[in-house]
Amino acid sequence: MASIIDLKTFTDKRGNLTVIEKVIPFEIKRVFYIYGVDDSVRGGHRHHKTIQAAICIKGSCIISNNDNVKKEQFSLDAPNKCLILNPEDWHQMHDFTPDAILMVFASEYFDAADYIYENYL
Image (cartoon, rainbow, N blue to C red; front, top):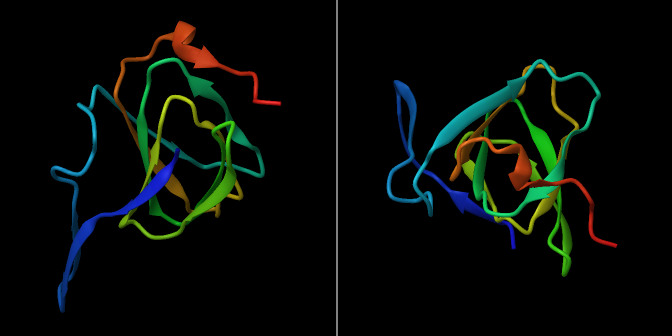
C-alpha cells in the first residue's frame, strides 16, 4: 500500500533545508527525475520487485495508485512530501504543473522484466 512520509525540514530566515536520511525504507540503487511534462500521463505500471520513493521537488503532480485493494490519489505538492510506492502499487503520474520536477528513488536498477503494465481489474 502506498503511503506518504513527511521529510524533515529545517526552516529559518535563509530558507528551507529538507533532509532525506534514514527514512527511505530501502537501499537506493537508482535515481531519476521527470520534468517538462505536457498533459501526458506517465507511469501506468507496477513492479515485481522495485520499491520507489517519489518527491515532487518543484511544482506539483498527482499520483493515482491502485494496489488491488484500494484506489487512491496522492497530491505531491511540497518538496517535503515523499510517496512510497511498493511493487504491487500500479501507478500513474499526471496533472504536472509546467514547472514540476518529480524525483524518484528506486530500490532496483532498471530491468524491463520487472515492469507489469496491466492494471488490476
